[in-house]
Length: 183
Image (cartoon, rainbow, N blue to C red; front, top):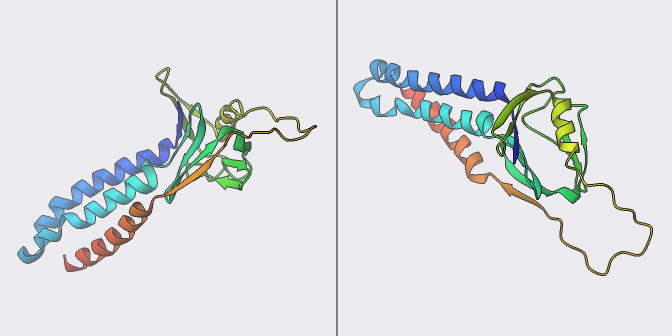
């Protein structure tokens, strides 16, 4: 499997996790005694949002499917359903559902990292190089110069919403704001 991630976003996530850890003792020292139990709440909110928005998003090139993990959902496209890759506005996949922009490369100048888990290698790539890696896996177009086949194998596109992640972000943001206001 090949994984494409944004090293800049992941570095920012690590910085936010360090800040979140540093805020806990600061909150414990400055909070009134009755509100000390609230000190870790903003840090938990920051850490969770950093994971969901900056660390988790990725693109996986599996043998059977292209998997795009963004903030809101995880989408799995059977390779036969992916018809192209564009880099005009960042990394975009074209399928029978239309165009799908990715969270990790929202601009054509984004720096990405390509991790090959089979070989154990990792290298920095541009958006165009990442797109070319995906294009190498696209199947060739099938000629449609005859009647359709009698049987058709399914080529699914599956979307799974990250509902609990979105709810967690909203709840932790609200609770963190209220806890910070009490501190």
